[in-house]
Length: 587
Image (cartoon, rainbow, N blue to C red):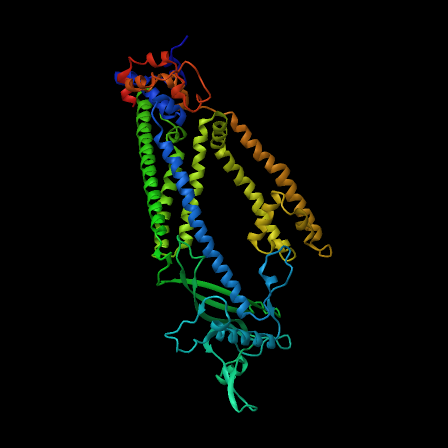
């Protein structure tokens, strides 16, 4: 029988005879230190017998971050809903013949595009928007107001901006054309005109954009116009169900009614766009005769989340530094003792990616909490950045919970399989992505003009991805009329794609993951395996062992898997009393 050193030398190289005796004396201690470093959290608890403060801290952080995101999500949802409903209300107020049927997104679409088709319809739509704008404060249910210096100031005028080609001659007459392709944009205020009423003998307001353009030496040439835009601003207050945890927000709405004639296809598409800018609100809200203090409690809660995340970040960075220091020691040991250089994959074993993940989500949680405090105290209105930070942080926090499923053997096998198969999965996705991108480009170019799901490149990609997952297959097949000359091509295209990806590529993907169950041990793992000490019999100080002796370890219970510190028998604890010096070094 060969001893451990002889067997290891045959595997990794000849022992360097010039190495100092200290290297030989530290080998067993280093092997045990490595074994402890690669223990699971449950094994470390079993080995040390100390309370798992880091585990409790991470679980506490999961709860706090989730509650924080839920509170912010309610406020964010209220803000987004207010903007969407405001946009719909503006469309009902200022777009002539707007219908609620246009507000839904059915598939296939149940209605055509909202557009105008004649000169009269265009001018009538503009006149309608101008009239309704002047009457906004009197007819609108929302708290909309004009932006003016004082109550006696006039209503600000709507601004019309027309973008058109610089025409040289008339457009497209007798199958000939001549024009300058450069585009010009002219903006000017528009308002009502005063028309004389013969019956009453008085002048009255009339909203007639064609008459107004004639009076001010403006005109619209529909042959050359690209886009016409009406611009105006309104202010509004969002009360958002006035609650103790939130106060009203004030906004300025920048509203644009666009008449898009860029395609020159006989219809001018009409669309209303709204953007908002937060304003400072002034005032107080009282509840039962006093001011609310819940907002202060919310800020304190966010500060607690920042403190917990900071502690977690410090502990994880400390663990990463310890792992790096141990890696440098092992690299030096193998070079001196066995004259062997560790591979990149062996060195990477010392980088705990779980800790890297926790560091990232801790940083995002701290910055997101800072933004949330600023938003609640009206110091910032950057909802998008705050929601992005807090949402990503919560996602990564819950991903980190997978690490603690390693306490259970079967879950740990799945996690290790995912980790080992990651490189092969990446290579597989690159190969599958080549096929996928080719089908996407082909579908967009060939089927796009005839199929609503392939009109844009991103839509074609989304359609193909949905087909791989079995979504809405029949509608995709039936969307092209059999009378179209590309119908046969679309059938061959879709059948080929579905058969290739569902029956071939997905099956290969599953086999790639299944093959990973047979793992190959690295150099470090084979080196550690020569240490046969159990976790219960190692790494504990004498004081820890004495403290644990008071428990009755003779009988095992269902808690043994998760509370192994109570399941070690007394003989295992007693046999390590003579190793105080080595144990203190490891601790």
